[in-house]
Image (cartoon, rainbow, N blue to C red; front, side, top):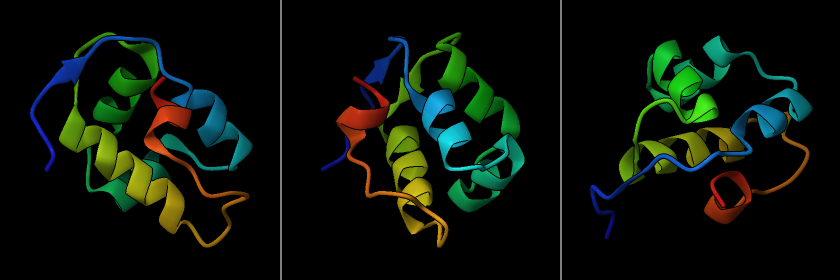
Length: 77
């Protein structure tokens, strides 16, 4: 079950997104989120809800060019 608990901790999202050669726009489109939601998750400027984290995780893992399979803890420690 996914809860609405949010987190402001620093993420590794930008590092992983760049390693996977994805733009913010590509990741946002795949995740069904806005580019500003991706920016906020990367910068930790706003709380990132668990449901948003899971959308990002799924989008990264569904990318056909992905270099590896990610876990939530890899992106949002």
